[in-house]
Amino acid sequence: MTDYSQARAVVVGGSIGGLTTALLLRDSGFHVDVFERTPTALDGRGSGIVLQPDTVRWFQERSSQDLGDLQTATRFVQYLDRSGDVVHREPATWTYTSWGTFYRALLADFGTEHYHYGEYACGFDQDEAEAVVRFVSGRTAAADLVVFADGITSAARERFDPDATLRYAGYIGWRGTVALSALSEPTRNTLRDAITYDVVPHSHITMYPIPGEDGLGESQRLMNYVWYRNVPAGPELTEMLIDKRGFGGSVSVHPGQVQDRYVDAIRADAAELFAPAVAETVVRTEQPYLQVLSDVRSTRMAMGRVALIGDAACASRPHAAAGTAKAAADAWTLAGALAASDGDIAAALRKWEPAQLQLSDSLLRRVVDMGDRSQFHNTWWPGDPDLRFGLYGPGH
Image (cartoon, helix red, strand yellow):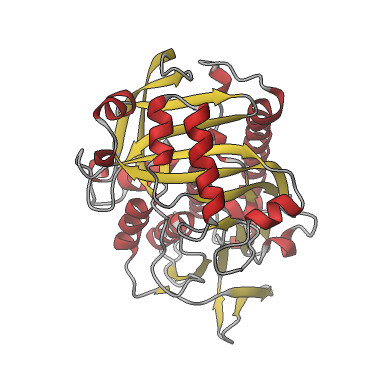
């Protein structure tokens, strides 16, 4: 195994993918610093993550923390119709966490001494000896290896591929969580042990239980959902993305900032369209928020001694529940390539890149097809195995 004890690494982006990368690089011997653009600890807005093997691998193989303390589980996948009847139900065990729970656990393992808040990376240069990252604060950071894990709005992606720009999918995701304890007993009984889908023309919603901010107990759990709704590009979408402060966005509108008229509309529509248990979950959500669904894929992930991973390299619609898993897979394979090299970081990145580009391409193609089938072609059918979650393929 190559000795990197004299090498330095900079990870730009301190979210789940960035922290996984930082932990693995540190385990490989690198002296690692993480730079996060937000000035305070990150907030996942309570949203859920479907846990897949690459996502949880750190806690299974390297961490002293118990993965069981971070997750919930369900035993079934089910589809409901408007009346509330189960039109399809099959055994399928999946586990979940909340974004905040998982982020805090990774940060606890990494620590905060080399985790720097409030530093927005805006560019980089490199030569044969090192790479230097520039920040808007005027700070610079030099390293033997730089990894950009700075998400869908990555400042570095254009350097890798100038043509890799966000392409709007034609629909948005309404997201939200509500305490299970706030739902009626019939609704809790219907939803608590399953991933639940409700499919309607040109739309669908999926939901599952996740840990609450205070723990895993039944009284602390949240029901997490994403509801996909078509909104044409143009003035209608632009108006929807203006928040209560009057600021326009391009990626999301945060909880509590969505204009009230849109929140009122989705509550009314949910009551009209969905099964009673699904509708109740949406109606009782105090602060739903919305995410603009876009696709982007860089045709390069390695440039000298600088790497691009996770959503920074390829961001796609969440239908396969694989975004976090893809970032973790990028991190694990990168660490493996570095360990197998003779210390030539640029050569290791070149060997690592092709397989990850292929994986991002196959994932993007699959989720685009899944989304188009739901939102535009109406060819989803309950139990279709092609619609299962998975990074490497349906169910995998």
